[in-house]
Length: 178
Image 1 (cartoon, rainbow, N blue to C red):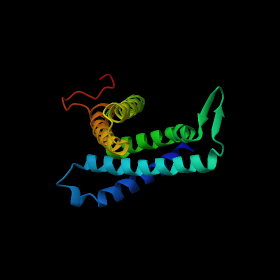
Image 2: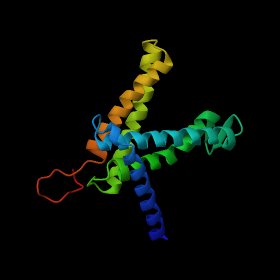
Image 3: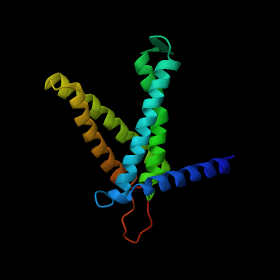
């Protein structure tokens, strides 16, 4: 069973890399391949987020409130909360296998670091919206675009050099202790 899953995973990985790399040549002088792959994977994951949010909001959560144990969610928050684990895992998988495939860190270290980067991005989004909209009185859409640019830049750099970093080429074998 696991070998069948790995075989499917390998085929998906090869297909995505082939398709993404096919469109890379016009962008070669503008950005490195890992940045292009990261952007493509991020765009693909964002599209998946939008689709899942739409499906959860319109078809899964039919009433205005959703009770989950002791917690009551409004419909729009429930859609966000329930799509999050799916897109978190697909985003992690694409970052690990497509954007930053040369990382020498162990998978559990990568996913914990990726989660930390994601949490920081959520906090940047929340704090940035509070600051720009409520304090500076900027338009929400303009504020969100600016914050998105900040988050994408932060996310790319921290994932490249922290979550999925490569070992230093010092002749020693890679470790998971860094």
